[in-house]
Image 1: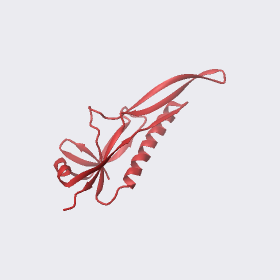
Image 2: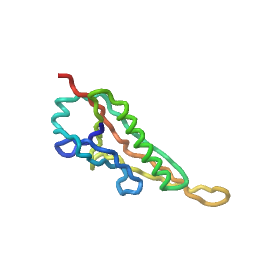
Image 3: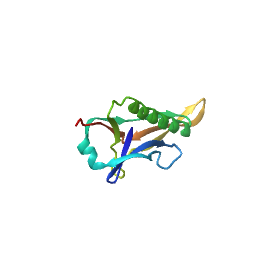
Image 4: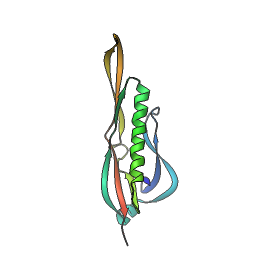
Length: 137
């Protein structure tokens, strides 16, 4: 399960990665599970932190960005699938501090005698995901 901190609570979320949105990397609360932030420090121990990075490039801007979002989603799904019993994932990035953004760089190239643009997309800073396990009583 993937969680994110909202104020003094931690809520289960679903990734909502949309290349057409203003904020491409976002999460939607599913309202199915939540707990107070204090419970995380008392009831869970941090095992690891994974930096989810992503880069793509291509000749079509929207297709390259969409591939980047699909790749990020697949990496998160893989992390969720690898969780052991009693483990959760927590989005560690904080809004306004180090929240991941999608950045692009355009480069002009000559292809078959014509000028074209080539697009390069990357996530910077990376999406930081903490892996936590429930402490044994």
